[in-house]
Length: 52
Length: 208
Length: 311
Image (cartoon, rainbow over all chains, first blue to last red; front, side, top):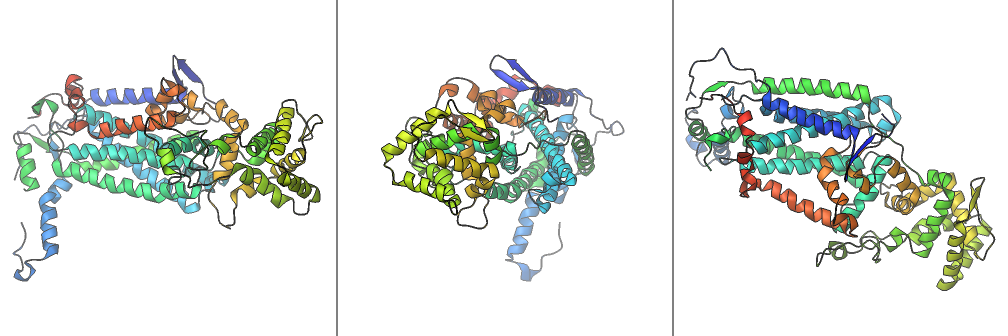
């Protein structure tokens, strides 16, 4: 890990592969967070309004 | 709600404060066991993950601070705890930004929650400052380079003598005490605001 | 106004379901602990050792002496810098009438010629009559005489060679300058100059302003940084040494330096500070800024956050 990273160069953008991977990973995580099904409360289908 | 008030306690500031606090944040709102059914997205856990990673950043940082700023350069255990601190910081920023994206696209500031958003941005800025002073405290080539370059921005902005990035003692003190202190204070405020108001309703339900 | 009543009103008609916040936080703590442990164990963390005046003098003696000459000539970046170090103008930034650097004034006084070269030589000359004599001759000379010696030596360095760690220049009229720089190089190569630049009259010291300013005046330091893609023009602010992720959250701070008008301005830092200041305030005030606060309605990611029936 101590060797200098590889860099990607598009126009004026210059980014290291680790940084690019991290940012890409964040976007993937965000999309997953939006799309992945959330564990539902399938045992609690009764119309339970807030008490008090 | 409570037992009859002792007539001798009328006019008590302590009682008034307690009643005020309980009015603003009843225990059932501080630690509710239920949430609205629309809380059904993984984006809701992003804030909790940010908080959790902050816990590990603080703990690993405390261990590093205990043994002094040179420890991680001379000891494998020190290096390991520095690594926990380094990767903890990476994880913290990743999830803080994801949490920001989620709150932005959900317009989490609606319905009287503007202050929650504002404290959130303040936390973002404080985190950047804490990380910055941390990078300056590494006592290696990276910290030397960051300092020599950052000084020009501080000097250009007129605060270079007041906030001397080349003064290790100053940067270290800011990093281990003052900035984390501010961070933890505003994390508490941010969380209390969320609990006081409850989570915001879906965007489609708030009129323009 | 009771919070209980507020939330009751706010969530009227909304179904409430069990949701264990404490369990969620506990799981988050466990999950992040595992993730961080794995990353730390697998990849460790970056730690490129610091550059010292000693390593600089050993790796690049000609460059080292060249920088020292510039300090004496008053032509180095530090010598001409300006506030907070001195009254120069070489690095003073401004934007129209906005001149915070000038307004702030000189509060970290640094005299590079004295602090980086002459004072250390003075200390080293104790017990070294030859060096003491050279220094005395330099101090006694007029400014114009010193300039002639320094310019001649600087010129000679262009063709200098290195023999046994010492700089060898062609014979010339350098006065005491050659002797002084040779002495400075010797102190530097032995490691004595690092300590000299740090300490003042105080025993305890945590301020590294002087050695870092001196290092920053030379090319060797920046050359090492360039290899690691840490220069400002290389998006350096968000990069890290080695193959580690850097401070990616600084992407917008560093981006401005890459584009006009910032990339050709001598006040780029101030411009970026002002730009990011405005943008940060705007970010904080999103709830109050029409247009900005409506973006979530125009880009309906919210439809994914809140799907299906909630009542």
